[in-house]
Image (cartoon, rainbow, N blue to C red; front, side):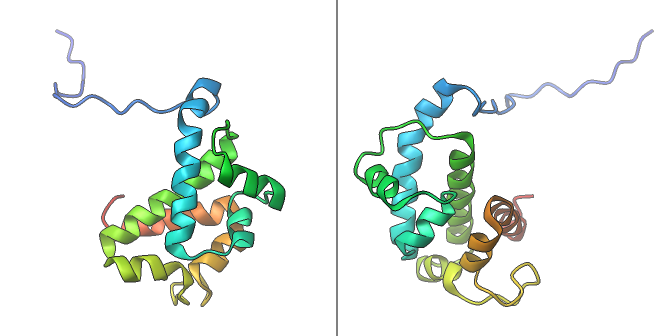
Length: 145
């Protein structure tokens, strides 16, 4: 008699992971990602120079072109950055009221992750890895990990 271990039957299917290396997936996601990014930057009152840096150091001319015409295919890095930022936004709005959630990135923070700086300054200085860290911190606070 063979006793094989297996997960129990469930009505839930595993989440299909998006392959961002597939151009078709990036084409599908890019325009809505950019639209969400620009709305997020407005909600957080982030200066255009800082928004360009959050996107990975985009030139001014490209930034304003993207703002006018978001129909383009983004690279994996930029979609990932936007995904982290949108996840941060979502977590903040779960944890706090709308006003504090949108101000939070501009407030000095005593958590050791931030070293007394604002979350925005931390993400601008640390790039993609800092965005990931902030997202994980907020996900953990809301019980998402």
